[in-house]
Image (cartoon, rainbow over all chains, first blue to last red; front, side, top):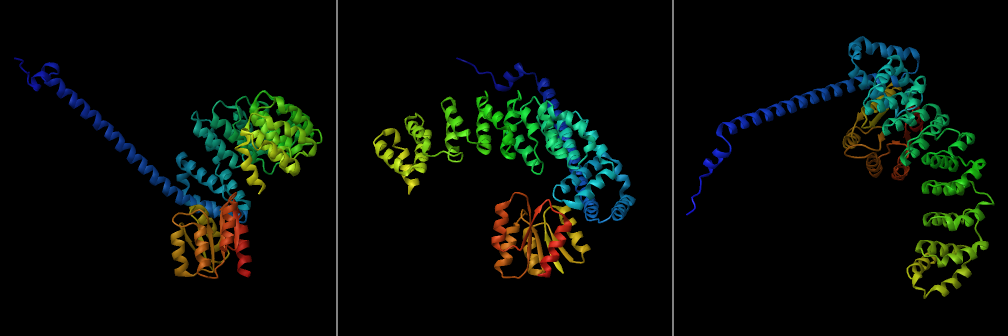
Length: 368
Length: 118
């Protein structure tokens, strides 16, 4: 008959009692230490948050007071009143960084003399030195925020330092620096495109364009970017060609239709639509067979705008044999627009063709 | 002139309030839409300046409520750039003026004067 060893005895043989006791004590101490750390950091975080709230309230009086000043004298008086009471507080970098953040945030919402007053406050309190200290940080988020602050405060005197980071290995630092140089110098700031070797993301391209809103373009500067080895630079240059309608860059733009990058070719088509001339239509029709399906669809979409007419009916009719539904649909749509009479004949001809089964109801619906 | 300013950003609220006080107006402030609505009922301001994005009740709700109650209080709406649809909606609801951020407090002061002169 099998005898069962009682559980505690088995446990005793595997793990001695003293060992278990020591282990329990050790883990209790570890958990206690972790709890103490958590409590310590929570308390520190709470205190810091409270300090931030107090400082924000304090600075809101100063910032609002300075913002509405109407003369140099008034600005000086407002600042002196504040400094008489709170100068010692402004010695600490923690406090100064909060003030910088509050000034920058407010400047984002106001313009005119009020914005100039805030810039004056930033410069008078030498807060650019604090921003420069952060700029020198090895932590990417500190450096990126410092670049943002310097740009928002129009600190053009630090432009060279910021410009060096426009090709930084870190994405956030690089993109902030790129935005900053454009914010500080307008279109000329885009000269970083001559040296940037990292990709300029789609989002970054749109951000740069939004910064350029009031700048005038220089086509001579854009031309070399269209030949850049960095395909994202070529893509961005084509966006600029389209936005600023640089007709003088027409041939370089059309040359980009042969580019290895599909994004560049697509952007070249968009740019061509904005700066087309009499040669664009025949050139695009010649290019059509070499293009990808996406590009072919884009070409068909732009045909009405670049002057396609009855002369293109033959070409469009051949496309009704295309293997792609989208292309056939677009071709039919264009035929319908250009020549409704021919379109009805074609519809009669293809009505029993199964490859048009999905397309025809859509076209008929559109015609109605 | 009694003006109610509703804006959730404390520094902007203070800046607008100081600017209007400097012009000699009696300014009431709030940082949320719900309180703004109750202040309108309680104090009947002569003019309302409201941000669009606010907690509890938006600037649009404030415009809508004021116009629905047929109160003849002019409303100036503050909004961030690029909120075209929101601005159009505000005008449809009956807003009297609109200022896009970033804006100049001096410009706001001028617009207040112009609205009050009507």
